[in-house]
Structure formats: C-alpha cells, structure tokens
Length: 203
Image 1 (cartoon, rainbow, N blue to C red):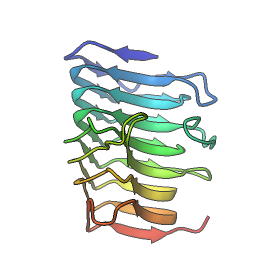
Image 2 (cartoon, helix red, strand yellow):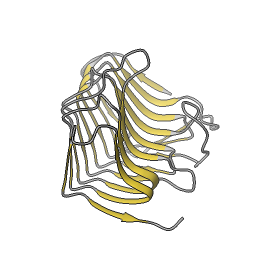
Image 3 (cartoon, rainbow, N blue to C red):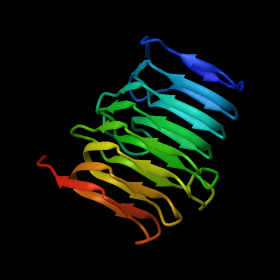
C-alpha cells in the first residue's frame, strides 16, 4: 500500500489502518534503499508482510500494530510481521505483532547493528517462528551484530531461530512462551543468549 523510496521520510500513520487484500498477499509498508526513515503509530493488516525494510539504514519502526489471520502455509507463502533484509541500524521498538506465521524476520549478510526491543510478538495455532535470523536467497551470509532484548514472544512452535552463518548477535532478557522449542541455534555458541526466560505452553 505504501512504498518509501526517498530518504529522510517521517511517516506517522496517526492510528490509521492499512488493510490489504488478505490471503497472504502484498506488503503493507515497503522501505527500500533509503536512509533516515521513520514509520510509526498505525495498524497494518491483511498482508503477506506487514512491513519490509530492504537495503536501508537508520530506519525506525515504532508503535505499529500488525495483524495477520493465522493462515499458516509453507514459506514463502506465509504471513510475516516485519522483515529486515540487508539493512543496518534499524530500530524495531514497541510494536505489537499478532497471529503471524513468522513474527520478525532478519535476513542477509548486509544486516547488522539493528535493535529489536520491547515488541510483543504472538502467534496462534499456526505460528512457526517468533524471531528468525537467516540468509537471503543466493548468498549464505547472515546477519551479525544485532541486539534483541526485552521482547515477549508467545505461541510459536519455536521462539528464536538462527541459521548456520548467523553470528555475534546478542539475545537477552526476552520472555519466550513456546510450543516446541524456545531457541534453535544452528551453530551452538555462535551468538550470545543471556538472561532469557522460557516456558513451554500447552497447544
């Protein structure tokens, strides 16, 4: 619905709603190849991806409510709350993401120095991953140097998952209520996990 391809844009939705076509189609807000952009305070629903930030730097996503429909499926045909791809210095703060297959998805070796903080990320019957770190297609490189803390991650099969090349990220003080696994780290010890709280839920 909204595409930002200019730098230094401040997009305050002021509580307004962006509603997509449903059926896991489209992107609510796309921020692409820019710097210095802020998107905040709106309701985004009915899309395949609520917000996608690609090839961008110094972006802030704050105070958004991203609503999906728990439609399940198999990647890439799923509902995703927020995706960061090859982007740096992105702040993802104080957002509420619900009924998604995948909550926050950070991809690519060009991603790093991002902060993901104080978000509420909730799945439902078909929620698979709360926060996931992995490469983009065509390159094995994955994000490094992010700080992920004080998030509530609830009702997903796995709370936090990282790929083989995901390294040197810090995950701390997150609260994870999971169905199968709190953390799936492909290479044990390649990231820092400290002071996270985890509890298994009943389906």
